[in-house]
Length: 188
Image 1 (cartoon, one colour):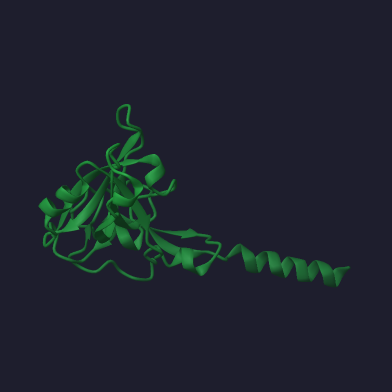
Image 2 (image 1 turned 90 degrees about the horizontal axis):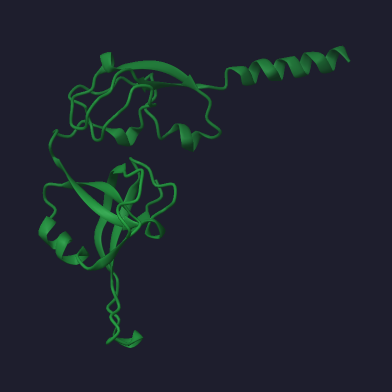
């Protein structure tokens, strides 16, 4: 019985420090604003698996000089790897997309990477054989924010995605106007 108590006690103590030190945002930081160590504080978090922990900036790693927030960061938020970049600020443009709730992952969040597809609508004059094929519009873009409520009667939510300055916004708009926009999350 004493031996069992010692073994159980050792396991409890070992699991008590099964946490990882990560950075937590100490003040609200707007998108594209510089972020440095003064904006962060270390906190310890328990993750169920290593892949979940890898999505966050470990406190043992300093944030590189010249880093900036790629989306709005809020006080208390754990700093995701996808939320900070050392690329030149302003190299990302923000494109709002109206997306039906059924055309996106239900748990879509800022920082997710998605493909953007345009599915042309089927008019009554077209038969199934003449239906235009869906088009891949954007291969890998970062979700900057997800609207919390539906817009209007259509049931769309606004999804804000980040575009590199090299992307032809006109081509994106031509492909999505009049089409259903579908977001496919990329495994990360």
